[in-house]
Image (cartoon, rainbow, N blue to C red; front, top):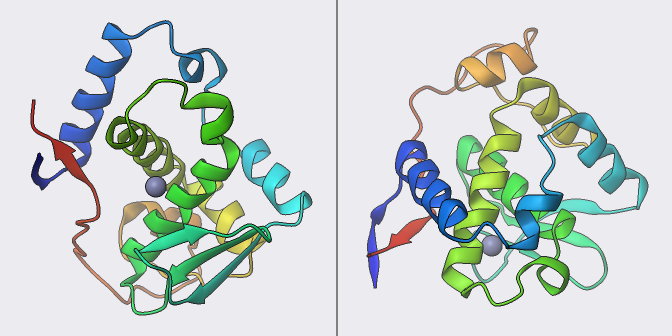
Length: 164
Ligand SMILES: [Zn+2]
């Protein structure tokens, strides 16, 4: 079952509870606080980020590409890219173990949103993968102080939390 779209606080509470109840999951041991190292690693291992027509908002391909839907609003674009990069950095085959798909998506979304929320990490992603920077909130203003503000108060509705 799917609940309504999750705010950051709802997602954070949900993932925190998952963690408290499942401290043995490997992802918690290996999870790194977001920093530029994660992104440098992905850029240097030749991952590419491109616009296109994925099945959902974004997808990871076998030839090391992250494809995001080209009609996404900028905040959605940035979160989608961070979400897909989190999938690459924490591959399911190493970390998902017996975690259900929907809970795994929540954890990946939580990681991706934390990457997007750090101006220096977001800047590294946008510049490292040659994506057009856009300013639409305080985070992007700090990441790209020279860009003019073009968007405000964009919503974001990708993730739905499972009902408990
Ligand atoms: Zn995903």
